[in-house]
Image (cartoon, rainbow, N blue to C red; front, side, top):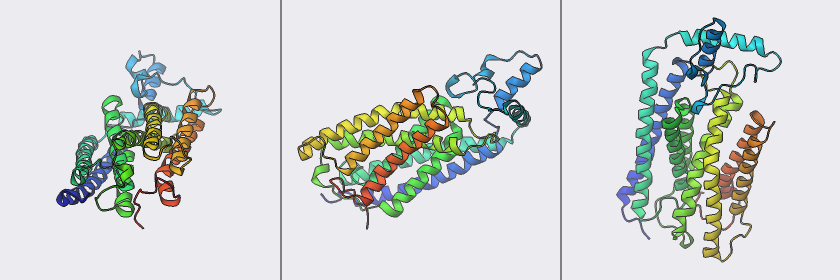
Length: 345
């Protein structure tokens, strides 16, 4: 099947480059908002403590300092043995930072960054659609197209969560991850738009691969939260709290895990239709199942008393590493029935 519209194929490639630029500019706007805007971590909690110490009545909404309206953690719950002194110092710093009015341009930079992210997402979606229309097939028939679509799903997940939970503070990290993913795919994975192998000419590609892309995008958002959780310092007042990062990562995985489960099951059904068996220990099948086990272990660890926070987040990042190896490592380093990913030599 030749390229039916080479002009659209070229337009798709150009739109990917435009998307990268928009995401980079959006990342700069988010970074300015994080660096110079109002501190997001501990400021409200510090204000609550200061008001209580002064005998003032504390508004109920000041206590709801976590994403989604959860209650704040108990005092000293994460402070450790030196909790009172450390918490007092951090509260004082947070109160002082919260009392300073940030420059107006910092808030505008955040608003512009959100607008640029939406524009970048629209260009990103257009790049995927024009790629598919140019060859009259689903636009995720090789590794390049899958990575581009996965980055689209990750940004879409962030934008949806920002509308629902106000997680703008993740914007700088999600957009830079998407820009790096697109840049990597353009540099090392891009192949000319064209036909796919007969095994991929099936309606199952719209079912199995679409589910894998959506789940991978949500897993990417959770992975970003996990990395921030581990590198975040207690004095980083402008970054989201560990409680918020843990909660966002958990919500993303709770949504994506059943979707990934469906993708694995749909892949087995497709394998039976294409190769006459549901399971054949192909490397891609094995690592998809290993990824499923790893995320199941995270959810189990997250729900088990005494195994939360940093330990559970490490398990989540191990699962994310399995996902990335399943996406890149298996296709590049291990042969198998899924070796038609068309990785350029």
